Image 1 (cartoon, rainbow, N blue to C red):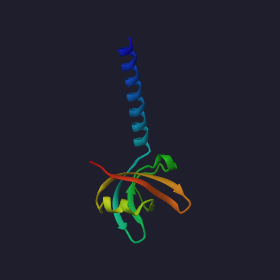
Image 2: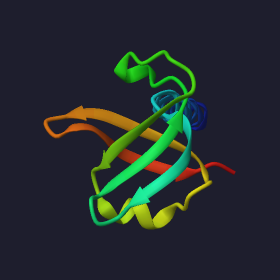
Image 3: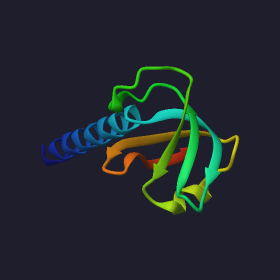
Image 4: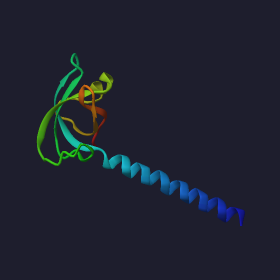
Length: 101
């Protein structure tokens, strides 16, 4: 009986973690790096819809600030990326970026 309860608990935790991962991915937008300006802490991305910012347009190119300038060293012009952008006092800011595989 204890073993069955233990397995049910593990299953519930696994489901919760996978749901959180799916939700995090849903906040990510797809784009392509067009320009990197390390000295200004900015990146130019051609991107699709950014749902969490109510930007439903396809094919926009925008300049974004980056939350952490170290993010600019992870990508190069031409890379396909997924990113998360949020509204901040300084404007729309990329808070997370990762190369697509």
